[in-house]
Image (cartoon, rainbow, N blue to C red; front, side, top):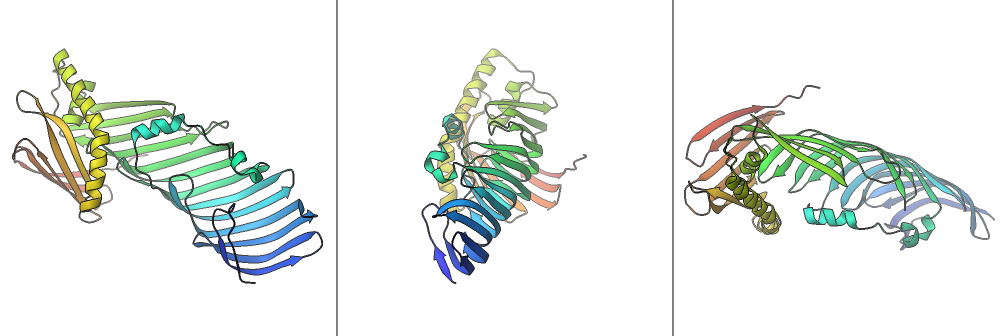
Length: 377
């Protein structure tokens, strides 16, 4: 047999079907059926017992290799799987193991859309797909360095160990997703992740407990970003070494300047206005930046508000970043109100944990830094 099956309720067509199907009065036997599906391969064997075409029982073994799926939502995944589907007309159980070779988050991050998405209610899959009403899940999902996020917010690679139970309409997910390294981008600054965990412990809903720490070297300060809590109760905190006030840290991030010890109400009000402008510009320059990046092939394009001059006059800075090779990134930034205050940064990753950074700052001074990171567990 060499056939093709393309049915509306099947998420992907089966083609190049080969093998034997043995039919008897009440039993359909699948003997080593092989097919191509989702750019991968699938193997099927087992039995299906029925009475006048009404299912009485089934016991199917399903093997999947290198299947490419647009699942979960907003992810592009490549998986291997060893599954078993068994049960009767009242209850079916899908069990087994899924090895996620790679799953990549393919959607650009948008803060407003993220919050709006939390308010939406999930559609009842049992209404959309009634044939799944009696299906129960018991799946172990694993991935070793196969979880990838690569967008304007973060570049992260991680592992996952999850157990999926419940029903398709009301799943229960337990386990952990962990990232040992990666980068979070905020206002043009690169925060290197020291650890990041998402623990799924709530059996009644998918609401992971998050713990993330990332650090960045900005000017002569080390900034430490901590994010903890659940998706509906998220706490973000940032500190510095040497210590600075929150206002000074915001100033350093949004304007590139910090004045420790100067915490007058006038300055706090000024900085609050600038940080608000900075956040608001995130959506505007995010849209512009993505278009410029697509047109010119740039890795990053930003327009950031900041305070300049002795009177702290508001202006803007344009920043362009391009990855010349896998190990070399060049960043150019300039004040739009003057031909001076041009910044050039070259970052070369020599090896794991060692980076050489050459800079020309806004005063025209040259510098060379060697950054070495070593994590002690």
